[in-house]
Image (cartoon, rainbow, N blue to C red; front, side, top):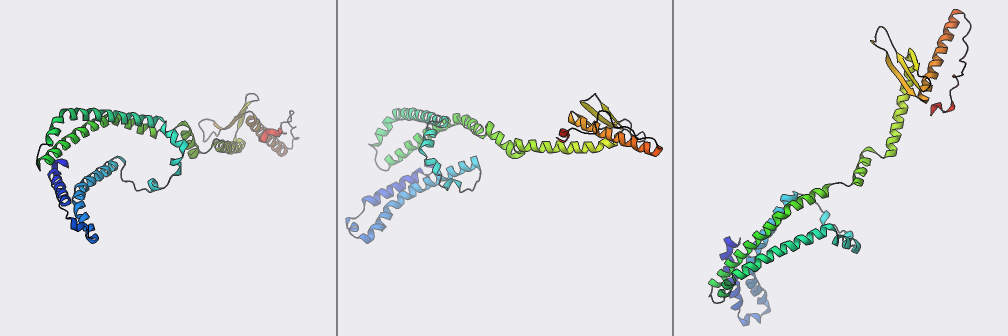
Amino acid sequence: MFLLAGTKLVDLLETSLRVGLALAPENMREPTRIAAIVTQIIWPGIMVLGPFLLVLTGVAFAADLAIGGWIVSVTPIIPDFKRIDPLKGFGRLFSHAALAEIVKALVKFAVVSVVAAWLMKSWLNDFFHIAAETWPYAPRHVASLTTEVFLILATALAAVTLFEVPYQLWQHRDQLKMSRQEIKDEQRDQEGSPQTKRRIRGLRMKLARARMMSEVPKADVVIVNPEHYAAALAYREDGMRAPRLVAKGTGLIALRIRAVAEVLAYVYRLKAAREDGAPEPPLPRDGRFEPPEDLDA
């Protein structure tokens, strides 16, 4: 902007200076004319600063839009009283992030200071010669030197910023990571609490056992080994290539399977005895028709 509009900026500054120096004293004695005179003097200055401020605003808006995208939110303007908490403020002041920002600021300041000192030392005579120059060459020379100094300093600052990009990318990825507690909380929110999952698992097992026990009467044989394991098999010669496992279990489940099988076997023997007119078969000698009290557990 300085390179393209530098001449116009100098002309506007010259106009503002001429209007200010040519102000007639009698005009200052009339309050009604003061506002118009002040506007006439200030307007060239506004024309100088206005485009520069607009360019800065546009660059800042474009950079933010390129990084974060178009986001419409009122959250940033909502008062947050946590930010004025002294304790949290001190915590942020002495945090790792604050230390990193301080180090980066010192590095940038050091680089820009070294470059500025080199420029002043190299171009000191040029700035001294400006005092001997006449109008309008002096302001044009000042504008040229200022533009060159600004571009060199901006290039140095941009070079330092390029070295900061990898750190910013790493910091951004690190901030996106979730802590172990956050992962646990997310899993609990998605899958439910451990107590709820255990309860659901227990209900599923109970329903599965109930369905399995309903298949025991369809079994043709129950195999035990000898007390703690039980497996019920069903076989149909006309529809099965091999026996099918319909129920299995250990411990109390095995005891339940054996109890059901013994009851069914006794019922079948009793039915056959009544049909043949034979005496009723005796009850099992070990009394397994009386299941233990904790069988339903």
